[in-house]
Image 1 (cartoon, rainbow, N blue to C red):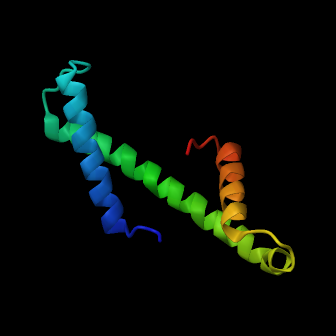
Image 2 (cartoon, rainbow, N blue to C red):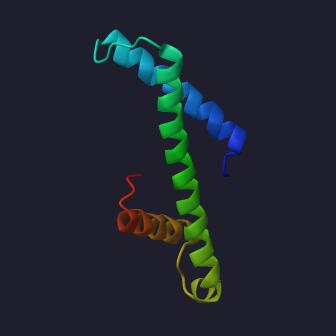
Length: 96
């Protein structure tokens, strides 16, 4: 199932909290404004989650366009979805 926008925002917030905590604890970065740093990380993570969702939507759309051919073959939808998703990601330079 595809996570809702609110769920994606919650995931992005938790990831931002964890990433910032690790970066500060390991002294990789010095942060004056933790709220701003957390918001910036959250924004990047959320953008990535949304890009991945768009990739999934595109893969589903492509498979639906070829649903009859898929149904007539012995191909497994989940396996095909994974392959189409990987191909689209590669073409777009998106790392899954």
